[in-house]
Length: 66
Image (cartoon, rainbow, N blue to C red; front, side, top):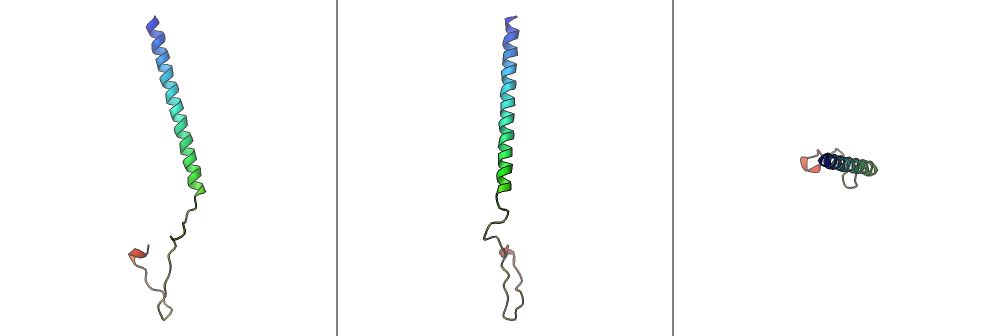
């Protein structure tokens, strides 16, 4: 019966390792989520600038403007 206790111990240690890995992964996901919420949604330089012609009419935007 010595073989049974060893397999039980091995199974328990593997399960413990799985639980720790799952907890670490969950913690990392939460940290990334908090970090993402803390970052501003718009960065400077991402704003679209509307240009006007000499008559005061807005110039149409092109694909490269985005």
